[in-house]
Length: 294
Image 1 (cartoon, rainbow, N blue to C red):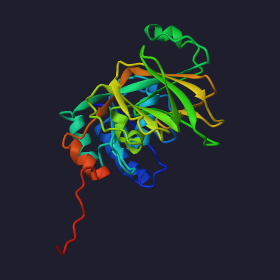
Image 2 (image 1 turned 135 degrees about the vertical axis):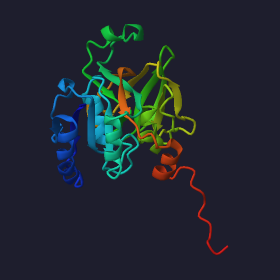
Image 3 (image 1 turned 90 degrees about the horizontal axis):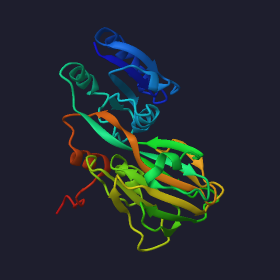
Image 4 (image 1 turned 45 degrees about the vertical axis):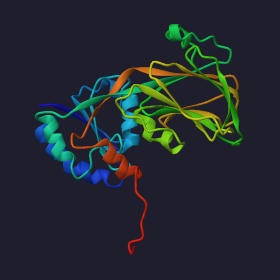
């Protein structure tokens, strides 16, 4: 029997009834190694062949980050709104779970990013990343994105953004998003960034409300190290990783974003189609609404 660990976001009203209905079946057909309802388990110590996540994309993002590289496939069941990463539905997941336990289902690696905050004046050498980041005041991984947002009192902030050895460019606005391909359909697309296929090894650097008509999103290789210096900030200027792990930023702080050491492993719906999902969830390529009487 395969070992299954369940993470349930019971704050979503439909999750607890679904969990109660599912547990007897899991106990009969799997080796159920644990159930988490409070988000407090040390997932790096969980020995499982699958983590079944009942919640939404936010719950899955949290699990991916908390695993800290432990190679356990994640099967997300969407009890939330969009569900790009949690590709299974409450109506169909039991059928696919049975298939996973039997002949198996596709498991796709999704790149993650790593963000570190270094004190002002720190000399950062991307070729000696580990030693350069020993003095980091904050470190976190993310499956979707690392976002620097202006925060209260909501004045424009000034950032200096550079990629690898390229010289930095000054930027005024409300912040910047560095997203993975998986995260391109999240905050990135809301801010005007492009949608990137999940198989593309890339980051997208997307400004948030730039005070410029020419500062456009840029797609770079996932091998690129992105460095952002907080030249001028507000009291509430903050770095968020997947909208969950966070660190306040001070003037002169250096945020270094690069590909993480580990990928996340997602069990995917073999019948899902990426373009169809975009059309259904984001109204992508929706046609005009013609007058029915013409």
